[in-house]
Every structure is written in structure tokens, then in C-alpha cells.
Image 1 (cartoon, rainbow over the protein chains, first blue to last red):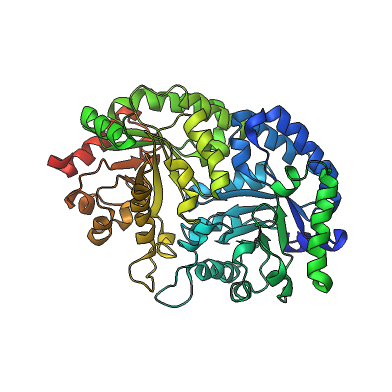
Image 2: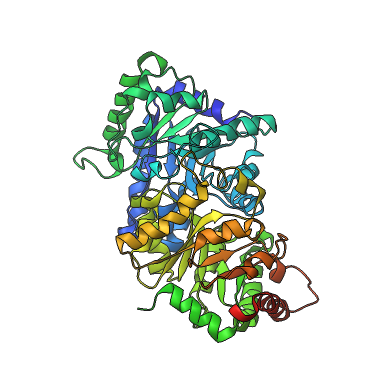
Amino acid sequence: VRSYVDKLKQRIAATGSRLCVGLDPRPEGGAAEARDMLRAVVRETAEFAAAFKPNMAYFEAMGVPGLALLEELLGDMPEGVPVILDAKRGDIGETQKYYARAYFENWKVDAVTLSPYMGFDSIEPFLQYEGRGVYLLAVTSNAGSADLQRLALAEGGELFHQVVGFAARAREHGYPGSVGFVAGLTNLVPEVLECFGDAPLLIPGLGAQGGELSAWAAADRTAPDVINVSRGILYADPHLSYAEKARNYADRIAHHTGSHA
Amino acid sequence: VRSYVDKLKQRIAATGSRLCVGLDPRPEGGAAEARDMLRAVVRETAEFAAAFKPNMAYFEAMGVPGLALLEELLGDMPEGVPVILDAKRGDIGETQKYYARAYFENWKVDAVTLSPYMGFDSIEPFLQYEGRGVYLLAVTSNAGSADLQRLALAEGGELFHQVVGFAARAREHGYPGSVGFVAGLTNLVPEVLECFGDAPLLIPGLGAQGGELSAWAAADRTAPDVINVSRGILYADPHLSYAEKARNYADRIAHHTGSHA
């Protein structure tokens, strides 16, 4: 079984794109409207997508029909494009087991975002799946990321360094799953970037959230990092097609990364 | 509009119970089997319940029929029993707005559990609802609670103290929602308990997780704390009815609290 990291590397090599297309439909129009839109987005942007990332919040906000829509979309994703389910779940291990089954076994997604607040044992049930991955929230793109994530610890370092340390613990346990991190573009200064080593990053904050790519692009990253754009493709510039917007973002990212794309 | 805290106080006064009945159906049997079981649990235990707490993980694990079941149960809860939706969500404010609408507007639950890792701005959308409440994960009942929550900070105190500080920030902003905390019984030593002041606690860890009530009962708590039992009522001691198990737990908690119940 190929690891999640290898699948993602292969996809990036095949497309030359590090764009993750975020599937965050505004729920106001209901599930039928969202269905038409998202089917068009997936169809038109797949060739420019390193990955797709549906955020469960927007589907839950449409109630049961929203979840049925998500299930339908997940069952019908284009071959070869990894799917990252943005769930940010975190619970005791006994409970996480059930989330892991729902996402990896029933929905067969490639990776899931998780919240690390409850500790290493809360992510272990997800690490036991070969060929799958998790992205742990490390430093996020919102202002509130300063409240806990960037706090200095008495033993040295910042709180999110402890989260980054979960990757080494996963290796020590010999778990087959890949461990990556969510790292918001607005927080990606050089001293933050260097903490992540070769762990793959899922980077939100480009487009609507206004982050800049330069520090990330200047770092000597070897991991298959992907940059997420959601609203910038789904809702910005309605005179452009989804394909044009996705291609524009993929090009903009590739321009920054230059040789190490 | 009565605050969530007042609703809960009134319910505790009316029933003499601080038992929160956790609705965590094992998903293996499917949604139809879970439906029969949970309808029986709700019907039989309501008179002994200070609150009901469905954990979304177990419903999601049953797929779309599981979510439809949760929606059906939420639409049919007995009058006057507060419902705490155990979701542990945490995302950027823009996204949390949609979770808040899904839970407070569509499903009309009284309170929601949230993960604080992304900071204060990630919980603000939930605080704007009058008569509703949130429980922020503070110190949980699993061993992994030591990994981040109990870490000592350079500025003094432990990480979870910062989370507890979100309650004061909510008051400063004048938000109408109530702020409580999830505090696992296994972590409830006196020096932890005293941090919470009069914020209401949702306390897991009794029963299957093996925590003891004595330190909590000895503290001079004035808040409408509730103690959650899930597996201990749904799956333990199958020779007893759900009603008997709920009454036994409610009595055991009341016995400990004595005068301050």
C-alpha cells in the first residue's frame, strides 16, 4: 500500500500543482444548489488540483441532505486526486475510533484534519490505517491562533511544537499512517516553518484570508505541501470560470515555488 | 430569555439529579437498532436526567442514516431536559458560524461542546445565542490530557487556565451565551477544581472510565455541574433496566453531593 505522502507526491508531480481546492459551499441555497455548484467545481478544477478538501461544517449546516450530498460527492471523486476531509475532530480514543471508521472505511477519504487538544492518544486510532494520513492543527490562519498555539512553555518552545512532536511519537510507535500539519499562511514565518521538518503541510490562508506565499516558498521544503483555496475559487471573481480561477491559483503557487515544485 | 445556566439549575432543582445521560450508541447494529435502543433510553431515563448528551461521533459512524436518527431524536426530546450536543468542533470563526447555525438554529440544542485549540475567535459565533451555552474542552478524562492541557506555561499557570480565561473574555464582550467547561473526573483534583470558579462543568469519566467523585463533591461548587455517564447506562449491567441504572447513578452522585445538590 502506498503511503498517503507518496500518493500526494505523485499527484503533485503529475499535475505540477500544489493547489488544494477547498469545497466549502455556502449552505443558504440548500443542498440541491450546492450539489450543482460542487459537481461543476470538481469537474472543472480536477486537472489543476493536487487535492480536494471538503469542510464538513458547510455540509452539516445543510442538515441531513447536506451530509447525503457530501457522501455522494465523496463516492464520485475523480480517480487519483487525494481527498482531505476537513473535520478537525478530537475526542477520547474510544470515540475517535468511530470517527476513523466513518471517514476512512465508510467514506474512504485519503486524509483527515484533526484537533490535537486532547493529546496523542486521541489521534492514535487514525494512525493505524495504512495509506491514509492526518493533518493535525498546529498553527492556524486566524488571529486566535495566538491565544493557545503560540504560547511559550515553561520547558521551552511554544505549544504547537508539542503538537509537531506527535509526528515523532507516531513513528516511534510504528504506525503506518502519515502525519502532517495544518499551518496557516499568516503564521508561516521562517522560525515556524523550520519546526515542521519534512512533514507535509496543509496551508490555508491564501486568497480570502490574505496570506502571502513568499516565506513558505523561500524555505527549503521537501514535503508535498499543499496550499488551500476555498472561497477564492468558489465565490470570488464570478466572471471567471472555476477552471480559470483554479489554474490561476495553481500558477501563482508554482511561480513562487519555482524549482522545488 | 432564560440563560442556559438558569435552565440547567432549574432542571437540577426539579429532579434532584446531576446525571447527564450520554447517548453514545454502538454503531455496529446500524441506525434502526440504535433508534429502538435510544428511544427506550430517553423514555426510561428522562426523569433521572439533568441533561442528555448525544455524541456526534457515534451517529456519524452510522453514516447518513445515523445523522437522520440524531435529527429525529433531537426533534423529539422530552420537554424541559436540556440537550448538550457533544460535537467538540473548532474551526475559524467564519466556519464556526455555520456549525453554530446547524446546532442552535436547525437542531435547537441547548449547549454544544467545543474544542478551544484555535482560540477565542473560534468560539465567538456560538456565544451570540441567548439562552444557549458552550462547554469548552479544558481538562479531559483521557491520559493524553497531560500532553497539552496540563503543560506549564512560561508566563505561569497551565495551558487549560488560558481556556478557562475565555469565560472572562466572553463576559467582557457582553456575549449572552453561557460558558462552561469539560473537566474529566480523573483530572479533578482540588487545585484544578478551584480554577473554574462558578462556571458550569460537564464532567465525564464516571463509570466506564473509572473516575471518583470525592474531590468534586468536597469542593464548594455553586455551579450547575453535571456528571456524564454513557456506557455505564447504555451497555453495563444488562440485567438492569436503563431506568434503574440511571437512578442508581443519579443517587450515587446525590449521595456524594449531599447538601449542595
